[in-house]
Image (cartoon, rainbow, N blue to C red; front, side):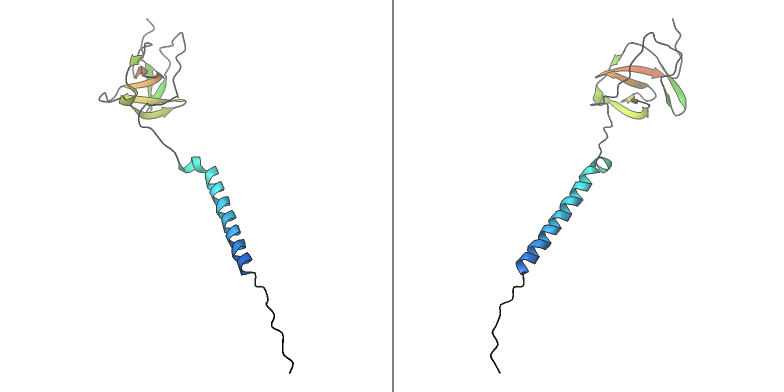
Length: 133
């Protein structure tokens, strides 16, 4: 029987391990990229106060006192004054969203509502219509 020559056959183990690693890294990168694109759906913050709120109410002149500015629990709210009152944004608590702006309630003043017109300045709202005089 003739002696067989021993041959060293390459198994490519390192190439296989490296290939699996590269494929796994590409899969992780793809999943991370897809999650990053949907980040705004599961990462949101809601401030309970008026701090940093940029949804401001714009007062149109001349003021129509009989037109409702917003509704709260089905009841219409009307402007009570065209002169803004000064309050700290931290003390104003968001209670509702009406179209393009928030409705606020001052700390310790339940039942009185406000809309933000500038930083620290709010217009009071109430259920009574004010006369045009």
